[in-house]
Image (cartoon, rainbow, N blue to C red; front, side, top):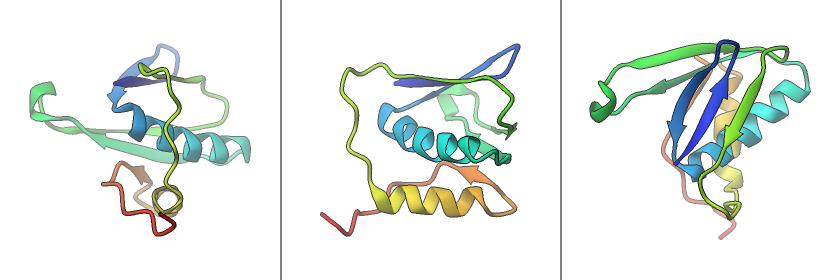
Length: 103
């Protein structure tokens, strides 16, 4: 499990390393282009349920901390779907990983 860390003062949200790697690919690409967008996630029952949303802006510090030592192989289909969501009015959110049609 890794962490997405955002803002000052910062918030820290735990994600599986595989999920975090895909979120990083999408978020960094959008921030690099100067795009702002909402990012939402749900909490597990163990974490108290509920959900949160934040506004991602290129001038706000962000960090991705991974627990594992190996970089996951990225699923292009998942990245494309996450990008599509990030461009929608609802914004980026974690969705289940689709099957990669190239494998």
